[in-house]
Amino acid sequence: MPDLGLEVLLKGKNMARILGGLGVALRISLLSVMISIFAGILMGMLMTWKNPISRALTRCYLEVVRIMPQMVLLFLVYFGTTRIFGWNLSGELSAVIVFSFWGTAEMGDLVRGALISIPVHQYESAAALGMTSGQIYRYIVLPQTVRRLIPLSINLITRMIKTTSLVLMIGVVEVLKVAQQIIEANRMNSPNAAFGVYLTVFLLYFIACWPISMLAGALEKRWR
Amino acid sequence: MSDPVLEIKHLVKRFGDQTVLKDITLTVEEGEVIVVVGPSGCGKSTLLRCINALEEIQGGEIRLKGAEVSKTSSNLAKIRQRIGMVFQSYELFPHLSVLDNIILAPTKVQKRSKEEAKEEALALLSRVGLREKADSFPRQLSGGQKQRVAIVRALCMHPEILLFDEVTAALDPEMVREVLDVILGLADQGKTMIIVTHEMQFARAVADRVIFLEEGVIKEEGSPDQFFEEPKTERAKEFLKTFTFERKRSRV
Ligand SMILES: Nc1ncnc2c1ncn2[C@@H]1O[C@H](COP(=O)(O)OP(=O)(O)OP(=O)(O)O)[C@@H](O)[C@H]1O
Ligand SMILES: [Mg+2]
Image 1 (tube, rainbow over the protein chains, first blue to last red):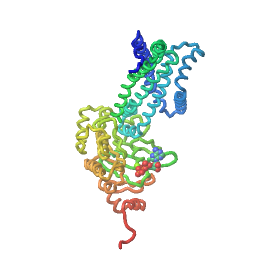
Image 2: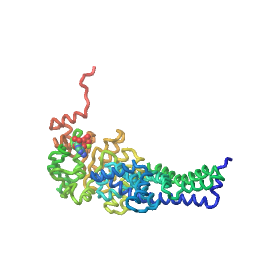
Image 3: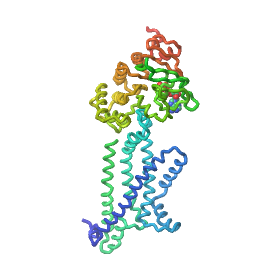
Image 4: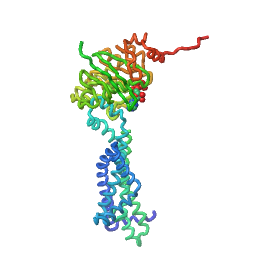
């Protein structure tokens, strides 16, 4: 068996450091995901408004988020705010801000898509039964929207968790960062460590994302 | 004689600068079955949608037992509960079972007890031969079955008048019959109805009065026998001709 340098992981507190890094990444994802879901639902409703001003603003927001690489946004928030406003945001907070900014836009677009995909017939036949617009939303539109939304938003959540590794770039101690430190520290006595450590990191990400993907698939089957 | 169920006076409906309904006046008595026929685009669907206040009207008035029906009135939801409507395209709620489709409005809108609504829903389903489909979902039903469920859903609200807009137009021919039979049954029970249909045989069988609508005007109105046997207007004659076939060339 080739030497993968896995013994490096077992040295000292190395395994604990990797797991701790994953913890930070998951904490950033979890916070951003929660903020994105709530803000995204509101954003999605805003996006369906016919008002030309709200329409133009939300479109701009979505375009900016889609065109700008997250890394640029991260640098902008982490370094930019220090420069311009003199704020000293922690890497973790900047990451949460950027990922929520991104996630809210993406989630909003999903919510908008789900809302407008409910046929006008559904509203009309509910209205014909004497339902008020509040009742139509509660019993007809929302349940159907949520069913369409769940598989899509789980896909988004998985993407958000994966993208968290970008945080490395501004020095949050996160999985890849820890991995890199371990690799550096053991360059001499275990030259293959890079492979083993990255493999472990890959597996950890897989373990974090796989159940979510499975759940998404199962829900999709049940509701389509 | 009791008051009419529905009174429409000088109804005008415009879409932009196109006037779709021009000065429609129509009275529907308790237990009466009105069939509305006319060429495509003459405003039949629009008329029904106005009666249910799904469209705003630009002139005249519509009254249900004296209460004004208008898209802007504050008790619109209350009035709509008293008017049942079934559309051409199946519009059951896809996320609810057949039973829940039927009892949603009776329980949430009319605040009736779940047990009582359920009991009535099941009885109505049995009457249309769909008792065993109560727990199915709409996607598991055929078109004809969906339309029968949609009729039951409207009936369960105890409407004072029922509106049917070409409920069989989207169905395969072999499913048309089962739906029309249900509507004939309702006529026998004395329900007040306005039916838009292209099924002329059915129209003749079910109607107490036939309304011929063309270009947004009631061109002719009469008993089914009179209308189908000897229509008074040229336009009605031409319209009825489109439903019969004849060979111009004599057979050899
Ligand atoms: N929402 C709308 N906006 C603009 N025009 C409309 C709208 N709905 C209907 N119309 C127009 O109003 C006219 C009457 O339409 P309506 O659907 O009432 O006809 P119909 O008699 O039901 O025809 P059909 O037999 O084909 O169902 C048509 O010319 C149609 O183009
Ligand atoms: Mg029509």
